[in-house]
Image (cartoon, rainbow, N blue to C red):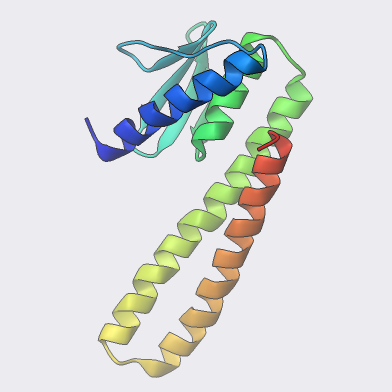
Length: 146
């Protein structure tokens, strides 16, 4: 079991307590992933896919909290407009997070190669991406009430 899977399971346990308090459907661990009602959360590395009745509904969700919340909303047949809004917000966060990681690696390589002009440019781009990722994450977590 990978470190990400272990962390995801720990999040599930803490989320179960919160969900029970808010009258939500509790997740159940299965061989295929985490089942919330009739919605399966399937983990692929750090991304999650949501399946409902053997149909892929949402793919490559970045944040665990979003995956759990979306699964609950889908299991309860909640507003598809809100689900789509939440999914789009998560995708925005994921895009900035990945860009941030790529720029961080490029910045490391530029520093290693003593390419100081490139370091200056990449530092500015990295800081901008990092700020945008943080804002996007706050937006997503605000949508789900965390």
